[in-house]
Length: 398
Image 1 (cartoon, rainbow, N blue to C red):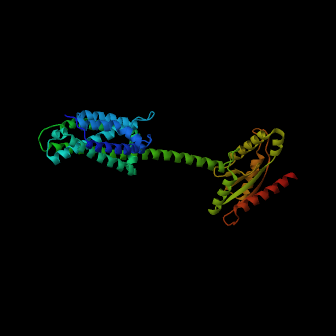
Image 2 (image 1 turned 120 degrees about the vertical axis):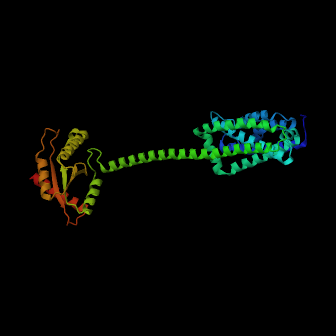
């Protein structure tokens, strides 16, 4: 073919410059690794612009043009650092879409002018018209991507996803079949349906690619939802565990492991609301200050722990014991009247021996009873047991 130099070449050149600027903005929106400037856009689009301008001028082999076009796409989407997979994915996606678009333009012109596609491509004017039409559609596609947020997010997710590799294999098969179809474009066969066949095949491939993108997006989103669900479930489990730990710290005494004053008060309120009968034993342990002053707080802590274990062994499973102060304990005896509670505490006090203690504990106690028909609140019951304990302490001093 003869070389063709004309002012008409400025049309695709100008369109390539516009496309280069929009492409660099698209790349920045999808991969976020390019500085978006007009100069950068021109430099990135320059190899592809020179390639197709040479095709318009001298009629280069179309299949070879498509092969070199992919190299141009790879150059434009070249990665920064180690993040090469995103650029490779986008180049593999953009190449068959533009190739199919270019073939559709060739077939459409052939149908309009009613000439074989080989004769159409032999004429430089029609080559310029075809590439200009394909560039206009490509520019519109970039504008749509830039302004369609969900589409940008879809492409960005798929470019970064590990699940994109099967789809990339499919894209490479599309590239191979389109390269084979490009041989039909240079055919000079006069069969009128041949351009229609080419357009149908190219459209079918574009539709398959777009449908695969939509389907892949649904798969990726479903996978991400499952991952987020697992992460949220794990975070919820950790939160519940932390909540349980906080509740345990609030409800338990750190030293002895007995229940806290807060837990005791809440449990008593619940029993009063349910009209349950119980007795409350207020215990004041003797000798803690003396041990702390003479042997240190570590010995005092052991004294409290040993006494707590001793009391627990003498309680029923439904009874509750709480440490409400340094040497003060409260025992809640469910379904137990004041007389039985006094007998239980007297027995507990009389059976203490020195075999299991470093220091034999002694204690004073007071009992208060909460019955079905009594209207006292938890503070009054606790105060009554406390007063009874002081009476017992005074009687033991005489």
